[in-house]
Image 1 (cartoon, rainbow, N blue to C red):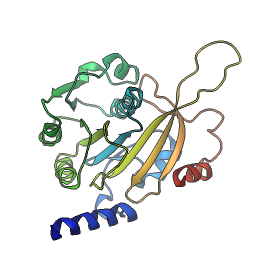
Image 2 (image 1 turned 90 degrees about the vertical axis):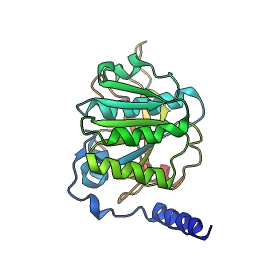
Image 3 (image 1 turned 135 degrees about the vertical axis):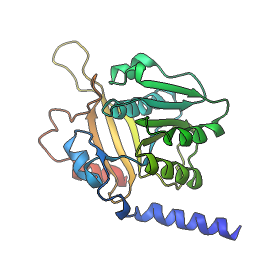
Image 4 (image 1 turned 120 degrees about the vertical axis):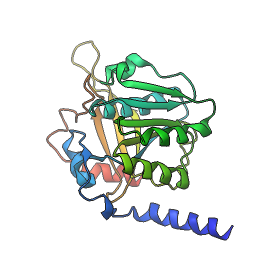
Length: 246
């Protein structure tokens, strides 16, 4: 019990200070292609050979879908096959394809229980032929996330954990970054029609970077996010910092 309490205290301290993660220096990263995000992240992008966490912002299905689409857009910009571990068949393949992740690239591992998702991810990360491994779980604790991190470091693969249930209370873990994605209002058009959807993408926690929030246009058919035209030429740091602090 005393050892478990000490582990929780150490994990909470790591959460607070973020950690400078000097061991990650020089490792390859995957650029978002959005300058304000890439310049804010250590190394200029999403670190490969690491675990990253994406929170579903709410319990409704739409928020879980946004988290899955955000992950799919990341994977669309990374070549190679992807292993997607889940407990129920609720992914909409045409939706993933619309943000650049073609169904032919995805291998699905459907487990009977959620407790089998993280071990399946870990096993997948040990195969160097995979570009990335995705898993959908309610919780990501310190010990299993460390195991995932070690496996990702060994193969150089990308591990993305979608927290679709119970994400309202994030727990300390070894993920290099934690993200949140919510829908944002679309701009009014001068003529009737549909404008590109907008997302609020939040960097909730990262090693070596402060929390920050960006307003972005939803991914195109190649997984590319971008700033809305009216925001592209002005900095977002001040409002983003206020949003993160609030």
